[in-house]
Image 1 (tube, chains in turn yellow, red):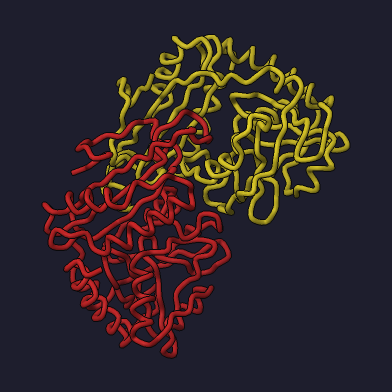
Image 2 (cartoon, chains in turn red, purple; image 1 turned 90 degrees about the horizontal axis):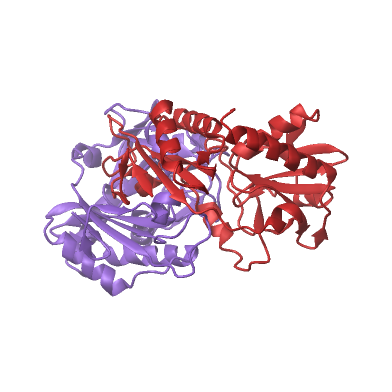
Length: 277
Length: 277
């Protein structure tokens, strides 16, 4: 099911700048019991992204209405919202009157085994490196070739996520997730000043962690630093938190902090689904 | 006029990976007298790009046929060819069976005054910096947010091009062009190992220049180096060569080398349009 500017359609104009240049942003949102989870947070990020790229933001009330409406029929699933700078000429110059296009689509919830959450996943390091681009870092924009190429590096089902470094060898994120690790009871995650997506779940984990009384240190760290961690996990809006039980040849057990965050998150999510956020 | 996989259409599937991730490549080709200029060179680059991104290349004969056919009715104009990894699921992982989508579209030729070619243009330095990404450098891929943002920096008609530096302060290219300069009778252009698009016109100029007996040095240089140049010009497949007569507060005259290249290029283009390439 796809809703383009309020109408059920399946196709977008070829002249849409999302198609021509990746000139837009997106959100990927879990649907549980017919409700888009953490919708306010997602729409806030989308609006902040639009502001940064100077794309007129479709109003929040309208997007909220459409999102809730389209999710109603899906008990469980994924809502993707794409916002682009609309249609406009050939050439990078944006039109004088930008008419933003908004595309909401519903997708099946991926059938990840519960074991990924409960017993952890196997991860690898990707060969594909993330570029450095402070102007776009943090944004969930439509220029995602790096992730596509990285995700094409492996095609076996025994590896669940690839961890990406930037061209300076700093660990940034997974192909579809953010990464955290615990060392000596301190929670660390990557600084996203030069690369990476500032995920909604990442933000939630930092907030939850703070409520639990331990702060998160955002910093730059290497592959070697990571492999010395006590606990590692990845997260996104769809998977929640997946502990890493093995990365390359390093084995880890699911730590106390990771489990505590997982449990708190589940309670937090249950609240959110009731519309308390 | 738009041809999608051989059929006249105006819309592309929302699930196309070009729209979802910018997962594709494009070519921008001048049409003169109903013929796409340097089509072989463009299709060769497109094929090389597809190989690098592991996108199955639609066969050359088919693309040549479609390109020549769609251009026939346009006396003068621009042909844009987009090739994407086709439609496929939500998520970065590419489908097992990739069905490449190809989109050919005809656009009006921009009405640039002859003075830009004959008397030169005014350029500025952009604030937007190009990221460093050796994995994607050189490719004319669909992830073009950097150029969109840079081109939005100015909206006056008295500036014709913005010159972009990378995050290390090296001059890379114009928002829609490659850049060359002449200093002490040596022709220089930017190294594109970390950023930038390896333009067809850039390649032609290097080839023509070599035929004329002077080689081109590809290297890294700064804004200050550039401002000490004897001659500067930008180029692309649509504009050919535009000399820069002013960049920020620095004024330049149109030099001998630039004019020689312009003249040789015109002859070369006339040959090309006759189908001799």
